[in-house]
Image (cartoon, rainbow over all chains, first blue to last red; front, side, top):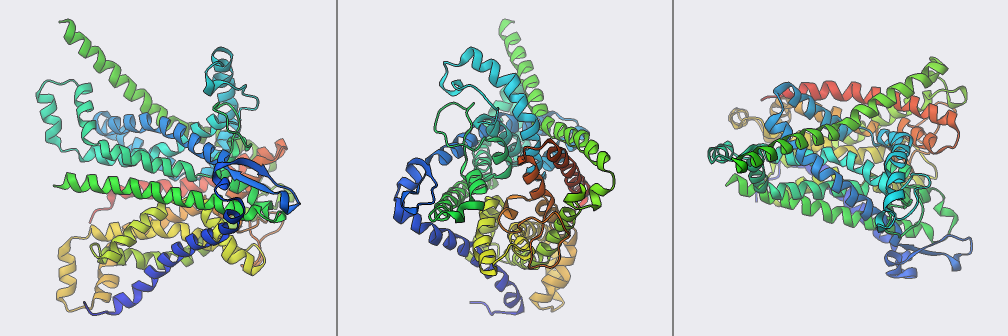
Length: 306
Length: 277
């Protein structure tokens, strides 16, 4: 045991504060959602019902639809972010001339830091109408027998719009992880690939295999970002309870449900608690997803270091 | 001969796909900037300088701008000292159990859904105080800013060559002085970068303010324990309004926010390449 000195005395209160805030936060979410769990049991997460009435005995809440919407939109988002971020990383590291490379990296960093409300206003006023006119309507006319395209895009505010917007927003986060990993591939591997006479396509395919864990981790972390994003999503997702498979229908996500309903939840007796339970879901999912993502990345970095 | 050609074709398809997808990844940003400027300038021109200084009734977003500046400043005041100490602690104990747990916690907090912070602060500050307030908003933003500052502090301190550390200790300085007065100043550029990036980040946050600051746009804020507005929150409210005049105003406010963000972020980001220790 080393002696405690001035350094420890000054810094440990700060460390304790940060841990305390985080634990306090988890505690508040647990305590506040207990009444809802008592009342609705597991139906709170597995039923699709949202009955807000002034008569407390008839209030009913089940979060299945927002949970479904959160997962659906986030999956669309990583479906978009995966090819974009991998291509971007390959292009930046292997092919871009130095000047373009710098511009590309700065652009991506700006996208990662850009206030999400700016994505939101662009999404609501440009992306939604554009997607509706140039993608959803033509696809619905021709392919409406496919379940995921099976509802008529009425307003354009939909699961799909939210997924696409989230995809654009999380691509820079996935890119940052994948780009860093791809840069760490030892140069001799590249040399050996070319020395074997592989084409650029073949050698890139080979090298991507080498950083596969990092790609997985980038995608997991991007999923975590997507599921927690609030304002941009709530401006484009349509905000209605829906469990259908069609991504042209409006939907809800857990975070947009909270941002939409929490302001007037105090009018109803049980809604606040139900919304804290929704928050608890986000809390736990965020924690698990991020821990897995960080763990995969750390383990890979350690192995590479050997 | 045929086999060779097929490989060549595949290679070409591969290269062009990569280039197209890369362009697709960054084009949205260019289009967003274009849209915000083209729509926002019109809105600001129509109202004139009142747009920056006036209250909402006069057609301006003045209180929101003041609110954003106040919230950013207050949250920095709360968050930066704590985060700086945590960052140095994580640097000093990279291998101890608490040190490792601290690093993990910081990384989780970086990725944490920000709306949850707002709901939490509502419960622990807004309800006991009985009113939305600037303090509550600043506390929520401080929680969000801390991991950025701490991680940057830790990373930039880790880049200091070990010989500097040896030199500091060989003079017989105590650990406290060696770290805070010798090593931290060497890493000040990286730390400052983290501070500025985190400030740019919280100035653009919306979700943590939803249930904490209340929003105040008809008059300028008076005091820290009363409601306050912020540009991102105002945009969020205006976009949801059915009135087209509000939409024009939202674009104008988005332009102001974008200019503040790019004005702070790009110079920091450009200077980062020079950070070498």
